[in-house]
View (cartoon, helix red, strand yellow):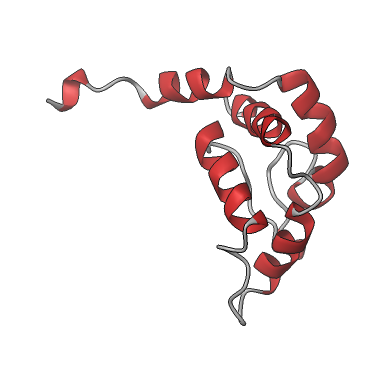
Length: 108
């Protein structure tokens, strides 16, 4: 039953451990911080959402969806288009996992 499910915070910690958070911190600063904020809290003026509270697997999957063109192409999604373009600069799956791990651990 539901009381047997693992605590979601434990799941995030396990997923975050899959990447190198030190390297992820450097990559986040270089590629993400200007829009999403130095602490991943987002920037309303730029339309960049907060990334806090999201687990590493979700973050990596959404990033890949942008870079693969699954997200960011709707005519009304101005900020998604920007993310789609920017996501093409960081393609290596291990680096994406590093950034995702770093961001996920910020909420813990």
